[in-house]
Image (cartoon, rainbow, N blue to C red; front, side):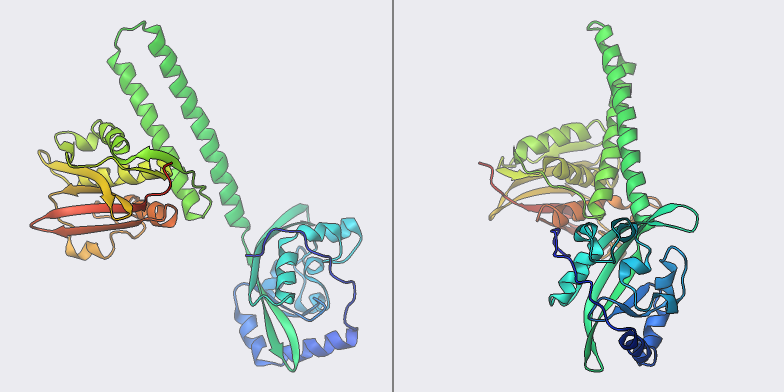
Length: 382
């Protein structure tokens, strides 16, 4: 991706109409035109002065007015897409102060400076046929030689739906967590008013609210992690104290009812640094999956310690992962428990390997049962 920095403005200089016409005819008659025309994403070809010499119909659909291909020939990208920035500043695309922060301009500048393939996200405001609107797109640009001249090809992907979904999700998680937090606050006030007397129903209600909060936060973290938006925060901790806290929590879960959940007495307390919240999600998922795979009266054993220069957490139960499921166990939405399940092992691998620099794996056979483990860097515990 192109680094977020201010770029020098482009020149106003442009090719003559005759040169643009020649270049446009050259591309229109080339084999490349047949390929470009069939691509579902918008494609535009720029000459050395950033003027469009060829575009497909999908590119024209991105324009505010739905112009045809012929009407964008000779224009710069922002002008073809009716960007308000150039109209407000009274210039052409790439020549105004507003253009310094434009994602498309940064990508094109990087490509012109020799980057093999440049990419970036861009959001422009423009006047549509009926009202002011925004266009969000992702752009990829790379150089291409043709007939002894250098051109740049740009692919534009409309990401308005992606951006809208992102905004809606953030608002949803923010609002619903605020609502549940308010419910938790009311429960805690009610508990204080009991003046020390134990109220089992109130304790159960408070526990349920806490679990709902945790489930919402877990789904939010998974959503942001899949988009690459999760920000890791390193915390100092000990393996055994963390595992003890999580195991105590899981013993209260319905999945643990009628079953035994124990910590291996040979577990070691290793101090290390990692994202405590994310690691908690991983260990909860591992224990929950093991408990759900264990019949009533069964036993699940968990443990932790050091392995070489890493810390290791593991969960064991006597069950066996079916042969047909072993190669798919970490796939998104795959589950042996039926439809609507399957984010547990997937989330574990995504968080551990995608964000914590770790490694997740498992062993399973009829004699030894099944053990899932996660290996993580020790980090700097201080």
